[in-house]
Amino acid sequence: MPIPAAEIARVVDSYPKRPGVGTVGSHSALDVADGAVAEGLTSVVLVQAGRDATYAQYFRTLRDAGGRRRRGCVDEVWTYPKFADLASPESQERLRQRGVLLVPNRAMSSYVPLATLESDLRVPIVGARAMLRIEERTERENYYRLLESAGIPSPRAIASPDAIDRLAIVKLPHARRRLERGFFTAATAEEYRTKSRALLERGTIAADDLAQARIEEYVLGPVFNFNFFFSPLVPRTEGLELLGVDERRESNLDGMVRLPAAQQLELPAAERIPEYLVVGHGTLTVRESTLEEVFRIGEKFVDAARARYPPGILGPFCLQTCIDRDGHLTVFDVAARIGGGTNVHLALGHPYGNALYREPMSTGRRIALEIRRAAEDGRLKEIVT
Ligand SMILES: Nc1ncnc2c1ncn2[C@@H]1O[C@H](COP(=O)(O)OP(=O)(O)O)[C@@H](O)[C@H]1O
Ligand SMILES: [Mg+2]
Image (cartoon, rainbow, N blue to C red; front, side, top):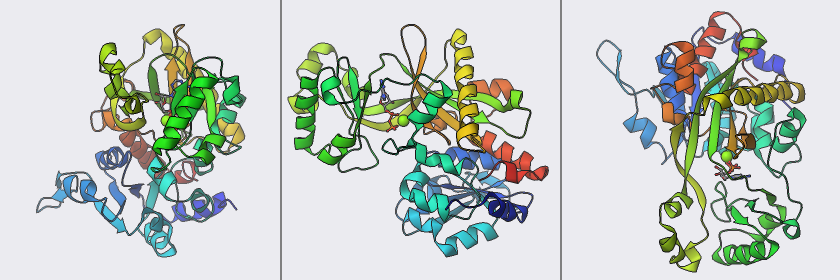
């Protein structure tokens, strides 16, 4: 049972004018924490014991005798035995008492069961709670459906291994590191069989996952992850903002492409199939004449999300795209929440965000600005679910 909007509205009605900004300590938490303190709010990072040093030590806020921050941006660190414990009744009560708004990230939707986030976590989420599940490709209501209903190009699905007639990418989780990928590419049914056998033997993928894998056309072109923001607080024509663009570094794929072809061919057979573990991010801008298409797709996405998952997108979202040789975008992945690469502009601001705001505007800061504006105008309930 989804949590009624009226219940969440009652909770935020009881919140102070300057709510705390809470996020799960991983993924993009530093960006969110930095943005919160830049806007004069308090940052609260929810961590799992043993995974807390970044927040509890290295970026922890230190104050001078007068209470002013002199270092760091993580004001409070709340430690749990396991991330999922942040949804325990005691923790929820503490979050509400402290007036914390939760900014969802991929760590939250990976470590806290989706059913808990949807039906049990009675703490306001800045964003679209009901859209967290669409990232799961094995769900019937996944992001491909949303893209289709929005009329946004996405990679053509290939029904079965035998139907592979061009370069395809096979998407399934890693066998052991469940939150990571066991992706591989294949251009023919034969290559699919050889590679999947090798990966099964190596323990990179599991047979059950392979049977459920999404096979889709591989789009040849560079990856651009567009970090958008949508505000429901302003007229619809001003609601959509493009803040910045990132790309991912994936291991060991990026290591392999840094080798000259002759050396790649000398790699032992077991190392010739790349893995796609995201290990870092880079920053990009996009050719200026492509921007209109980027906005067109962003607008379609916002409209479709509002129709299919009301109230739709609230705040940051990320469309992960390849741009082909004709300069057109194909969206291959969607995050209906803060993307994983926004730290590229942490504290500096995103190029497009800065151009809009005339001051440094990272995704984290934009979220905090939205919270501050909504809180000041008594409109918090419009940006939470
Ligand atoms: N259809 C595709 N064509 C080309 N590359 C793709 C395609 N889908 C994914 N990729 C590559 O695989 C990476 C991870 O894919 P993605 O769908 O974002 O997986 P995840 O959901 O695990 O983030 C992308 O960054 C991109 O490099
Ligand atoms: Mg992705």
